[in-house]
Image (cartoon, rainbow over all chains, first blue to last red):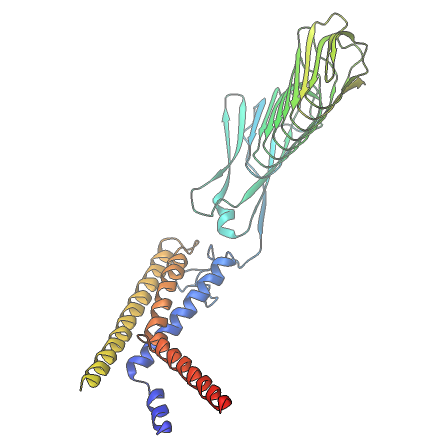
Amino acid sequence: MKRTRRMNRTRLSPIDILGITLGVIVILIVIGSVVTIARGRMFDARWSFVGRHAPWNGGGFSFGGPVREERDEQVPSGATEIEVRNVAGSIEISGSAGAAAIAVHSVKTAPFKAALDNVRVDIQKEGNRLIVAEKHDPGFLMRTGTVSFRVVVPRGMKVIDAHSVSGSITVRGVEQGIDQNLSTISGGIATDMAGNLHASSTSGSIHFSSSGSTLNVRSVSGSIDGVIESLGTGGSAHLGTVSGSVTLDAFAGLDATVSLHSLSGRVSCSLPLTVSEQKNNRLNGKIGKGSANLDVGTVSGSISISKM
Amino acid sequence: MPEMNEKLALARKIAERKVAFVRHAISYLVVIVGLAVINNLTYNGYQWWLWVAFGWGIGVVSHFLSAFLYQSGHLVDRLAQRELEKMNEADKTNESDKT
């Protein structure tokens, strides 16, 4: 009796066989799609379940792993100002006395080929200004590619603007006195030989040397470390950070009204300062006639100014 | 006779569930294959149809489990039967201990 009942239970009707077969197929599809999505292979892996090319596609896709593409961009000549806008990659600008024109070298990286193709380097010339920008086409999860720029500028440049979101910005070896406007959110900034300088970062540190009459350096959690090589009569220097420290080396002939203030950090100045006000974390005074204006403020970071 | 009717109703319910699942699974496969073809004919990079295959697939797998494993409360019935047998065995051992 028992044996008969067991036999009845295991006997499968055609609808049972069809249903179970379909169920197994659907389970395999779900597992395959989960694996494919989790490994990020849905971007250019056609028919990735079975790992082969679709018959109407010629090929050219890659499975897994980051992809990279380097190239020298075509750049119009005659620009004396450059503006570089980036999102996640770094920006390196260097000077070359032998260069005849601006050269832009881009390095694109992405986790998969489609995202790499989705990143473009857009170069336009507006008057004397060359604008180099990273561009993405719209698309869900397609904005994962990044570009790093290496720019070489010749002599005779007047302005350098560089903006990034999470990449670092470095300006090295350019001609002395070029006005620079540099900003990033989470990367660091390093520049030397700047003329008028405006630099801001949220979490990165800032290293600079400047010789212009305007100096504006802001950070939130990063430290500021710089050299003031010159600050003309009537010039102004404003430096501020929240939790980072500020360390400045100033040229010997600095002639400025100085205001150093911190909420909880230490304040010190080794320059010959005629003190007009000194409290716990505040130090005001004049160096020389006080023709320029030097204002440095922090919330919890220390402030230190010394002679070059 | 009422027992027979009850069994027939249950068998019919189970058969209806199985047929409904087969229809659901076939429509799933047809639509997913169609989306995959459209995806690869229009843009052969990003395989967006996988999201549909995954999301809808979870629903179809749940339907499969309910149609072929649970079978209209059979699992609960079997478990209840087993619990009842355990209780009877416990009662018997208690009685034998008393005697």
